Length: 240
Image (cartoon, rainbow, N blue to C red; front, side, top):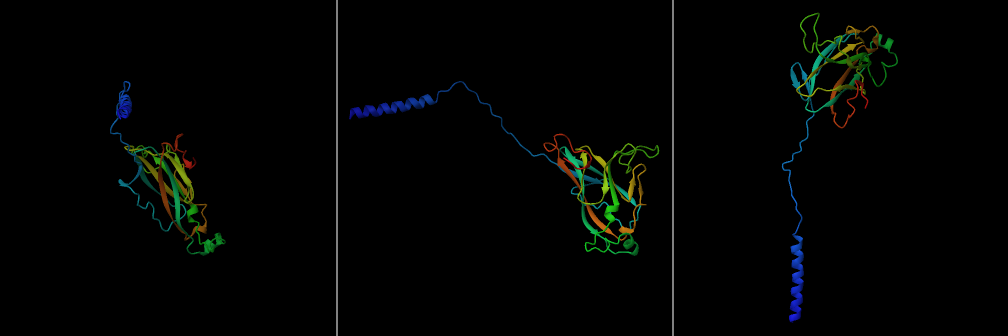
């Protein structure tokens, strides 16, 4: 019995030695960084029309009737992004395209298309838009004004083309708050003469008589970091 007790005590002693040995360590030190916070940035495109910030954009820019070849018009908006660098692009979503009635002159100039079952019009193909960054200027020596609604000689069109859907255009870098840039958006029922911003309707025939269309102008801001390491796509037709 005594032998068995001694053996048991020996086992207990070994376990105790192991437990004590486990608590012995080399020199060490621990520093803890506390309160780490991760917050997603914001990318919010804000459009200003006539001094009214719109987010989301709900205002119709153009509502036109009785258009004639040579007609033109313009509206100036301002854009800013809150609050990360972004690349801007613009596209047209054609939501309605109608031939409506077929007048006698229209049938003469458009005998094949005017009576098709699709009933698609030609007006949207004849109306050309133009977007430029409006840096302002002076009017015949008068005081300089920002966002003067005019394509001045030192300003370059960013994009232009017919109001036909399916094409996406780049307008390059967008301003980040607190900066803001003005953009002129203009239409011409015909062909633009950019030298003097006149609209030439002489090449438009009767094929678009009585036609109508509706279109959405879509302006997008795309996160620049990680998506475009080489910079925003050049202005013009969007390409990455």
